[in-house]
Length: 335
Image 1 (cartoon, rainbow, N blue to C red):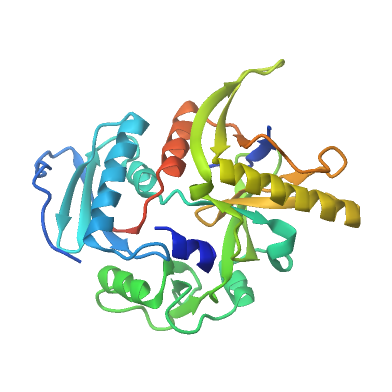
Image 2 (tube, rainbow, N blue to C red; image 1 turned 180 degrees about the vertical axis):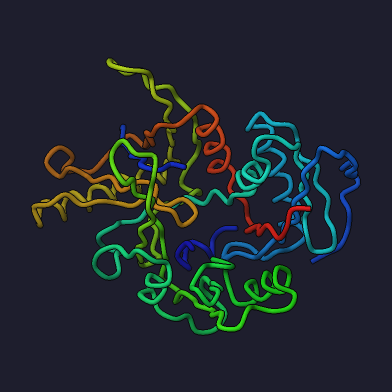
C-alpha cells in the first residue's frame, strides 16, 4: 500500500538491480461471447484498493487496461465478459494461460522507499506470518488482510481491508475456512514486502525473505512519465535487455532530493545508504547511493532497471508499470 497521503491523491525481476543514469451487473455489448473450446476462462473478482473503490467506472477502466496490455504484450486480445460483480477473462489455450492472465491482471504499482529510514525491525524474516507479526495487528478494516490455513499456508491475501477478505473467502470457500484457519492483518502504515533471493549467484532457484517497512513511499507511478525497453550493448558477452524509467519533472526533482538526502546521511554515517524499489509488494531492487561519487544526489530524471530480462518479460513489465490497474483482481477459478 502507498502512504495515506499519496493514496488520497490518486486513483520475475529476480536479482534485478537499478542503475541510476542522470457492483453493477451488465455485459459489455462490444465483447463477443465465449464459445471456443480452445479458450481458457478465468473468473476474477474486482476488489477496492486504497486508491479506488470498485465502482462501475473503475471496473470498466480496469477492463480497458487489460485489453491494452494484451496488445502491448503482442498476444491475442482476451475475451472479456462481466457476470454480475465478476469479470470473466478468456485467453487462448497455450503454454501457460494462467501465467498470461496473471500478467494481464497484475496491478503494476511501483514505489520507491528510503530503505534505512523506513525499515522496521532488524534483519529479514523467512516467513510471511513472522513478518505480519512484526508489522502488528490492524485495527478496523484498513490495512492488508490475509487468511492462513491450519498449517500456516497462505490461502487468501494480501487484500486491502476486511471487507475484501470476506468477499474473496465467500467466493473461494463457500463452506467456510477449515477449522484452525486464522486471519491476520497488517497495521495501517506498515508494508510487508517480499524479496526473492538467489540461492547462489548462478542459480535460478530462489528463496523468499520478508521485510517490514513503514509505508512512506517517496515516489510512485504518478512520478514516472514513461517506462520503455532498451537494449544495452555490452563490451563483453551478449547485449542485455533493460527497463528505463523517465520521471516527470517533479518526480525527477524529488528523486534528486531523495538521493541527496541519502548521500548526506551516508556521509555522516560513513556508509552508503540505499533505497528500495517495490513492485506490487515485491522488492525488485535495493541500490545504494555512493556518497563519495554523488554527494549532491542523482540528477537526470532517469533510472534503469537492469536484469536478465527476455524481450517478452521486459515488454510485459513495461506495460504493467506504464498503466497500473486501479483495482486488485483476484482469480477465483478457472473453468
